[in-house]
Length: 441
Image (cartoon, rainbow, N blue to C red; front, side, top):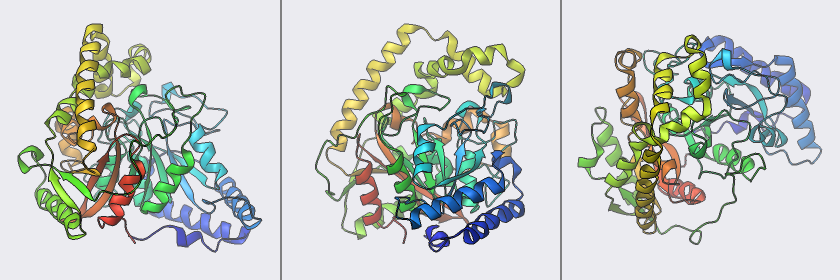
């Protein structure tokens, strides 16, 4: 896996900043993917900020991301760019950056623009947007994955070095997997969600995507820390000592369910990679996790999406994608007693998860189940979306950490696995990926 860092390692003056930014805007024009973006910043502004960050680093200031460009999903505030969550009628122009953006900018990274998404971050397909379906970077007949669709494609096409997405049910991990990217899905609360249009506020996290694991993890590290605007933000409190036990869990073929042709074999090869590097592999019964996963859309938790934007959706029916509107408005009729019943069920599943993760460094699963075409999604949007989230929906509900990593190619397109860990085990997952042979170069 090739890092994006070398391109900027010698960019120490304005001339080099100009060349760097010029090359990215030229690549933007050549890619001809307007559906990736909702807002792009002026080239001159980007050039000036890159030059300033590089000069500050040269002067001895701490700017570890100087010379890098990043994209921001358009439900995250960037000062001066309209935040719409892919619904123009909902849009507003923030006066200040979300803390995650301001922290990255303070580290020297420069925003190139804001990216398209499944409207109101509702979906795993990347097609539910008035700005157009975001097509896959390599095969434009297929979906990019969502909801952080534009962010993934911007990285995959080499337009930016890394990108921010959000992940409630897999919205960062699925598009990362479909593009052969690393996707850091942190423990809830480690990265504040202040300045972000919520999907399900109690379950939302900000994710990073990059072609390089070190860069994805560095960006995550720089964003962490509580913020007064997010009452759910918190400090990490690891539950066990650092260092690997060199044990990973895997799922029995019966529980894998239906996968795309060749994906079960690719998953087996990934498990074998851990074994070849000295890890012990143990089977894990994932049925309690899958049962919890079904509640994110089919249970009471979807009511939180109505809390976030339900009144707006009902007041602007002509401005909202019909699939998104159907999901959100239906949640208004969920009775309160259902919420408490589902919370009790999830608490039991979380207790089970704590027991499982005390014995393993990570549970290794396929990130998603198949890579559908745009036509397949159009023909059956809800069921297709549900299939994509089989192995991602439960992670935030059970307060777990996750890391999506590339795991080869099947039929010419990327295949990805995810490493799932206990609460606050984010660093352990990175170590397991590297020692298991999935850390890149």
